[in-house]
Image 1 (tube, rainbow, N blue to C red):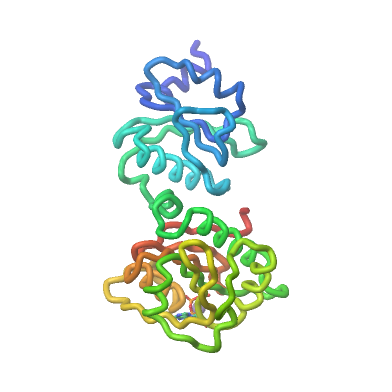
Image 2 (cartoon, rainbow, N blue to C red):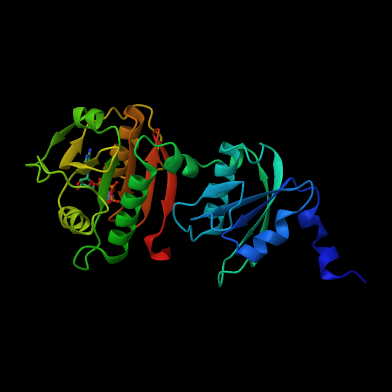
Length: 270
Ligand SMILES: Nc1ncnc2c1ncn2[C@@H]1O[C@H](COP(=O)(O)OP(=O)(O)OP(=O)(O)O)[C@@H](O)[C@H]1O
Ligand SMILES: [Mn+2]
């Protein structure tokens, strides 16, 4: 009779690399001297001191997103090669490695989500701060009401040139940055009004209430999304900005880069 290990042998056959998501130190050490198989660690911090390390900007709740982010990062940093067979160990339940996925790291896994953090014009921490703010706004709404919001992050000069004010800019001449708790309260308050927020590469709030007027020619966003999302997609094709959008109608948070939808998350999962 076969034992369970043999039955699952196929999962581990011909593996080029093992990817460990947020491993404990002792768990990591057991893998570290594997022969012929590379070990890559993906976590918010490299607390185990791995040589091959990809930084996770947030704990993706959905495993497929976590794995995509990790594999894109590992490909980008050259820890694995396109076409490699990879086994990922991650946690779905209580923080210990309880789930294994076998994935081929080809171009199909590239959704652009790693690229969003690592290769946006804006600093990765700024993207992360905006994403956190938008997720929080999506969870709680504003005064209990669902609210929509559009943040255009990075390449602010060009974004300002492709937009016009809908009202006076409350951030005119101020030097405040996203991520500051008081500023985040203000941003949430202003999100009830129309238009987009424009944020610089370093996180400075350049403007609220901007009406974006990018050329939407050739922008291909999923059907069913309205003008806010169209403007978000289009402005990221017309400039080097990244757009992060909270939908008032379906409550999801989406990010666009290079004219494409690269991330879609449900704030309730975070
Ligand atoms: N070009 C634009 N620039 C800035 N803001 C815009 C633009 N177009 C729409 N918006 C904002 O988006 C809001 C919602 O518009 P609309 O319902 O068409 O978008 P949507 O993509 O369906 O978004 P939602 O899912 O939040 O409803 C508008 O009230 C406006 O504040
Ligand atoms: Mn709408």
